[in-house]
Length: 100
Image 1 (cartoon, one colour):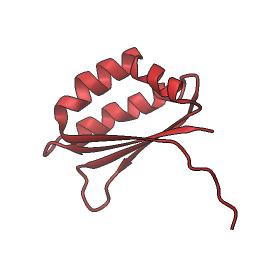
Image 2 (cartoon, helix red, strand yellow; image 1 turned 90 degrees about the vertical axis):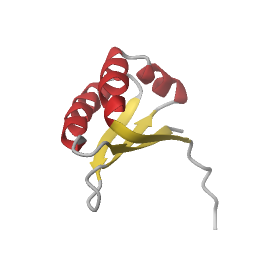
Image 3 (cartoon, helix red, strand yellow; image 1 turned 45 degrees about the vertical axis):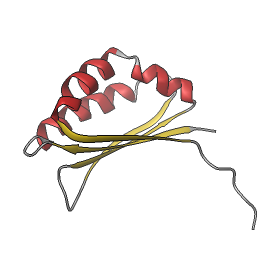
């Protein structure tokens, strides 16, 4: 079973390019972490200030470890968050499959 995180950001006006540049670096570093199964950065097609991160980890503990990395603390919390109008993070676990 995996653990998924969906983060929805809305950048401050005119800050989307700066935020995306940092998030591209964070994604590359995060993909190298133990337990990281995937880390994708998306930008809204209708609203370029909308940014969605789709992160998948082997376990919730792997995500917790990700949040303790220097690149997360420095780049996400220190550089990205101050450039956001809003930030919503949803932690998800897959539901069991039901037979029809």
